Length: 459
Image (tube, rainbow, N blue to C red):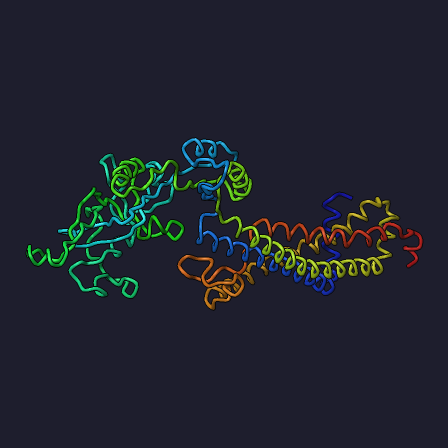
């Protein structure tokens, strides 16, 4: 018999016993649907956790800081160290960052230094790294060749106090009122670094008639040319801090060292090491630690969560596989009953000279067809159930109970997606269903070819 003949006979035999075929296929549908939905829940959980971690920090970034000064064989986190780290396999980029310490100096803005701020995070970054860090401009531009042009964080201007207002009412309460405006527009503003002059003693003030007001010695000035969108991953930079070019910071640092007496920084404050993928984070971090530096990344949080998600995914997949195993037993039972009922037919085929392999192929093909039809219908049913589950979870917040938090899947606060069915899962489920069908039909097909042709004809 040709392959076409075997295929047509198999489909005819399944169609002749529609009721039994329907019930057997239904078992495969339920089993396939169970395994797809169970695994999709595990995948959805894993993706929700990764999205949550991505909001907490960059998953492929390692923050490198200098080793404690008490270390005997302490290594300097300088340009040479940055070059060595860049050569580690798996490292995509290395970004050096410095921090300017103001000490008892203040930031000043407005006419006659009216607006004042005692503390601010000022970071120095190479100008080529502004965009590599992922800064997003709300307004303005990046610094160009003019010296002391800086970028301000989204809430930078809100941190200033108004020296002409009474204590307790001299700051803009933007936490309570998101529409509140700062005292001055940061973009284009001139920000001074000033040192407060000592006030004269009260008796001296009365004798001289001087007003009891703060007087400032301006050390240097900066111009804000751009305002950054706040990023929780880079809050010091984009929240309420300032970012300037590294070379401008080094020049400014020399001036401040003379005034404040702080020691000259001989190494970088920190390095941001970007790896090519999440898989590279752990080996790269291990190598950097061997070099003598301290590291910090999301890997210490991600790995336990990934392990937990994998275990739950395997458990859910195992439960679904049990349903498919039950369906396999149903297929085997159907095929054995079919052989019992078709004993005479098998004898006729043997008498007509059909090869035993063709008879075996016919029964295996029937079992495979049951698996294929059931698997295809199970996948379609799984896609429908998955869509319903995701719709309900996004509208009722059920996805949060699955992932352990509110709005983990979306920065906007929407609920996480519960079920994710990637193409590989659908293909795997279909192939697995066909495999289960063939495996279940293997014993009955062997039994069919062992029937004696003479006894079969007498049946």
